[in-house]
Image 1 (cartoon, rainbow, N blue to C red):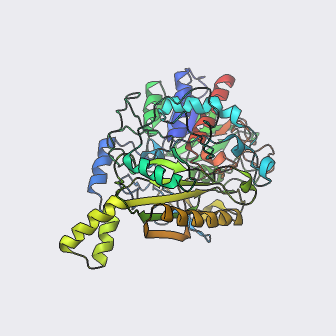
Image 2 (image 1 turned 60 degrees about the horizontal axis):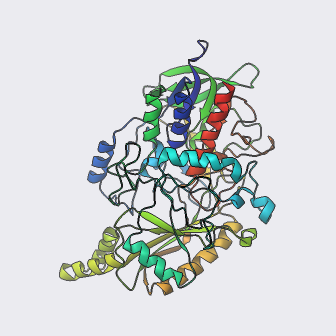
Image 3 (image 1 turned 90 degrees about the vertical axis):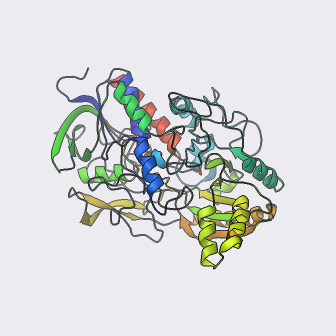
Length: 536
């Protein structure tokens, strides 16, 4: 039970996967927890129905936010004016604000970092080292994998070198891997002739019934919404936290973290409801687990945790290119999950002293919509339209790449000086560019694309090697380190400025690697929750 002096032992701001995992862990250990969520609570069936009736949305092309709520008090990222992109590279991620957060429409990728990803500066002379290593996070990675029901291969070399199983694991994946689809099998065989290693992608889809979730049946709508809930999403642990005793308050927009008299502790969290009415809640500890852009926004509005001047800075993502090929044989993409495998040849090696790591993700999308639009624009109609749709859709092969980014203080999230949201709170501006480290890797990506085209005997349906696409993997905005002069949090994800304020977000990550950051954020959050439990 919480001390009667406080409303809770711990207030968690943000009910996405990272915040909800932390809230559930604390609640199940008997701690009094309040979980605040800016957006509403929406059942899956309503989102599925919205997806089915939305115009211009498909699983492979379009606005993935469109089927989701976009409330005036909790706008999603694509709301015009909410995030103003001011830099040379446009940067607006696909952020959602509802109970469960952005993992409602993720692709489900659940990667661990490699041991070398924690030592970029020491090994390759670039970027920053983490203040912790792989061994520190390994048990927490496993805890997160069990909680989320992660499916992975215990035999694949996830370093990309095509050798023995790696990185080291003390326990096998909790869920068996899905069988590779015919599309994945044939793609793997064809690119292997060029020395490329296709590996099964660890993911949060249940291959057998798991923790109340049904087994995946291959709906191919994983993004923007798994219609049956086989794919994990953050609402699962938001609900589990409630059942363990946490108090979940939706439509509660946190806007101020209140400092105590000496400034060393956060004594209260203030939130507004949709009418703009304010409530003050007190707690012994506060965890801010908002999106990697919303977390620095809240800290900047509150004027806390920023003695380093680094709050909002060092924004990183996996900016890169994409391509769609039409292979010389039918591969039949679109059966099964939207992504099943990756090529990791450039995930780690001495080259990282010169350019970023690269991960090529092999999409398994249905191409009928863009194919039909292209053909109609060319005037193809009637039986010939049907024939060409069938021919192209059978050979549709989409690829997208992810490139490792280095932290740059100039890449930053800041408060707008001119715009406010419906509650009168400042919106965000984002200044973003890619550095030479990324651009050098982009040249390697272009060469790989040429190789893939040759290996598949393919023609190019579409290719972007000019505009830097972002992958919705924001990191670095509340960066971790050993020195309070250049970092926001320490190795525990505890802010240097306030010893009872923890940040549970991918924003703490000081190096981006080339893999999705979600699992690392989850592992860090569970580790922080355990530290808080020991101190309460």
